[in-house]
Length: 459
Image 1 (cartoon, rainbow, N blue to C red):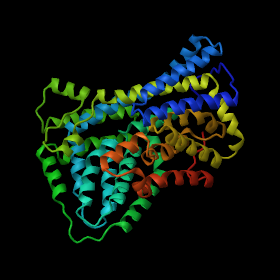
Image 2 (image 1 turned 90 degrees about the horizontal axis):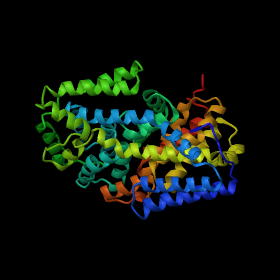
Image 3 (image 1 turned 180 degrees about the horizontal axis):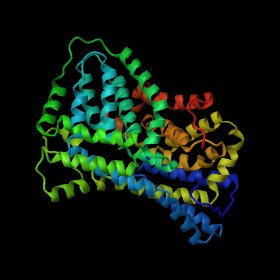
Image 4 (image 1 turned 180 degrees about the vertical axis):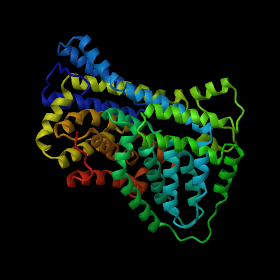
């Protein structure tokens, strides 16, 4: 819960009408006005404040509930700062360029869809951004697909699946850090727990993509070779550049706190950058704040390597603060509590709880079309229900990602869906049946719930 104080007990009709108004406000702004989610969420906050004042709840109490909600996200904000530093340092240190080069090196004609899926998963995990992966290497793969007897729809499905595998499992991903923060679980424990559903979904998807792959004798690798040459020309592809990744893995094994892990790995990458780049202290300060700017001359490579920095996290940080403030009001006004009471009679087992959680996350994605809100609202709504059944909160975190993070690109009017459709020049409905990883993840997490597989009880 955001706050220990509930100042009002609305009727079920009032709660439903307020939630419907908020959903309409946000979804209309995202779909029709092409607005960022910040403005409609701020409007929703104002609506809730007006409702609270109408119910004669003092403003100071409403303000306190917003502050309490925002405070619950401070841990995530520190992690987001660390992610910004890590991305920019991993680029200058050569870690991300080296991982990109390694991924491009395994492209071949055999098992094309499977290779596309695996490479985008590697790159997505390396850079922690699904949309960046789609907009860069994903676009490159769609052009490669035209040189062989390959379906653009299946290729796009493989790209989306791989990219959102990375978005889900990368310690650099803002959604992964957000989910871990919302449920109060260590970042790497959260990622480890997700592997129980993610790895099977990955393997099954890879096998199906391998079976679906076209049989091509001639395969044009000119574009891929060009990208590799341009990566080498940056002088940032080196075998030693993998060291920061190894440090991150070791810190994970020894359960070093996530923020400290990010800092240590970032420092190691900055030290390594002195071996192949000549940068002043002023350059490093600018890169750590504003991100690295690539001047390789290749549009795809420059897009992949121009990112990072603390400032790149501001969008997400502001959204987290606003969303959690809205969540604080929803709980303080008793709205979420009233809605949960209405479905309490349906939640009598672990299976029904996990199913309800999954469909709530999916429903928020479908109705609002916003990935972050599907995580934030679902997490805060079901925290106490998991505690009541003595389930470890990492179970909730896994369901939120299995049915929240990976579903957004499958919604045609969602933020991710609209972006991907425009980048790959294919509509969401066409690639949706072939985004196998995204489709399998919620199915597996619900199945595990009913079969009580890998469900951790609270100590």
